[in-house]
Amino acid sequence: MTHAVVFSGVTFAWPDGTPVLTDLDGAFGACRTGLVGLNGSGKTTLLRLIAGELRPQSGTITVSGTVGHLPQHLPLGTARTVSDLLGVTEIRAALHAIERGEATEENFAVVGDDWDVEERARAELDRLGLGGVDLDRTVATLSGGEAMMVGLAALFLRRPDVLLLDEPTNNLDLDARRRLQEAIGSWPGVLIVVSHDRALLEGVDEIADLYDGRLRTFGGNFSAYRKALAVEQEAAERAVRAAESEVRRQRRDLMEARLKLARRARHGRMQAERGSEPKIVLGARRRAAQESAGKYRLLHEERLRRARERLAEAEEAVRDDEEIRIELPRTRVPAGRTVLVVTGLTPPGGAADPAPSGGGGQEEPADRARPLRELIVRGPERIALTGPNGSGKTTLLRAVTGERPLPGVEVRVGVEGVRHLPQRLDVLDDSRSLVDNVRAFAPDASPNEVRAGLARFLFRGERADRLAGGLSGGERFRAVLAALLLADPAPQLLLLDEPTNNLDLASVRQLVQALEAYQGALLVVSHDLPFLEELGITRWLRMDPVRGLLEEPEGPRP
Image (cartoon, rainbow, N blue to C red):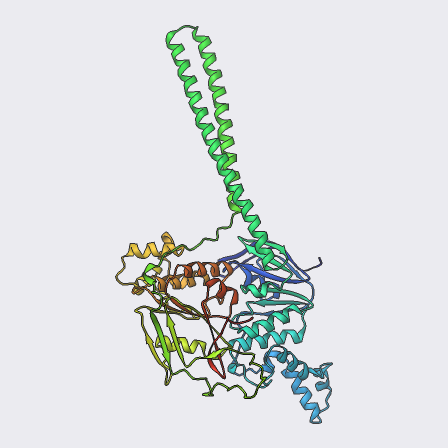
């Protein structure tokens, strides 16, 4: 395979000295590559280095052709327009000037061969589901998902040789994700995408895994990568067990060797005490025995040392992706108990649900979801709330928590503990330690009880004393989750708003593990279908901009 991006000995650290990448070697081929790794492993930094936005302290990066980069957070000035974001404003201005009769050399030079730039721009927007977005609309009026899709359309217009995408599905609804997957599937050039979206990663040609400072490439999509990694990890764990067995055997052999030498030395002393042989013979025999014993002991010590080295090497090959193992019995809600009642729900525009047409032989409408004017949650239901961006999902969660009541909507909560995990993860005090933050949610808990709880969320020992402001993205999410689930009273209704945004795959797995222990009612806003399926969702709701809150008969179809 021809390599489009090659890097050798790349080292990068932030100005404060924090290392990110050290002596990294690797290459990306002329295909679609999914770049995965833990939060903080350097994926975003590597993309920025390839794009030329950052320079390595040492090493080389070679890129074949032009580069287009879509970062996680687009620079969106309030005065910028969609046309500015697409990069076509200057060409459009020259075109319009020529149409007004200003046929100057400068205007023709600006237009070049791009006489159809407006048509192509609108075609790209339409392909990505933004056909109704005007080119002169300000980006400040766009949702986060719309801005991301406009940024993607800009890159498709440019057609760079190497396309870099950093978490492009963040803030995208299901329809936008499907369009993005189709666009990536039809991309003819080199593409490198950093993502935790497993559905998106199923459509790539290879997976590049950045782990523990090394980049390794696996052929095939995400499913193939997981299978290959599982086989590799199983072999690594077998190697660890074999190495541990060898260390135990060598340790036992060394002990036996020492006992044997001790018996031999005791026998020599007894002979010397009896005086049965001349002293000169006994001395020579003692020196020979000591020399032989030293070699014998060193031989077994060397074997033990080599066995320990093989064990250390074997342990390094096993990934240390720790698992969360907790029990949350106080969150239990009996089956049938009414947890939440929300009444007064109406469609966002106040429109009634369209009535079916009369007459025989009429086909059923394609969307058979049932409109809800009242939402009732009973027992430990696990409810997924999906729907387009801007349809009101987060607004409904805020109304349930009382943070932002809705006119005409009444909320009655039938349990004591209600906790909300917002998208911004802004429930912690950055100036306080993790122990102090959790104690703020459970003031009657002792420091030892809080530390024991944090340890189950992988914050052991000194990690529990770290300031919340110094946590990485994945660590902060775990800390917020710990604070909510260890709260007093225990949460029996948990509201999660896009919980997997910006989480690496290991953190998503840890979130699922934590929620497996949760026994209360769960209401989750998410567009991550694989995550929702792993949660064991029992009921699917969808927020429709026209029809309001709908109950899906079988759940959403991607």
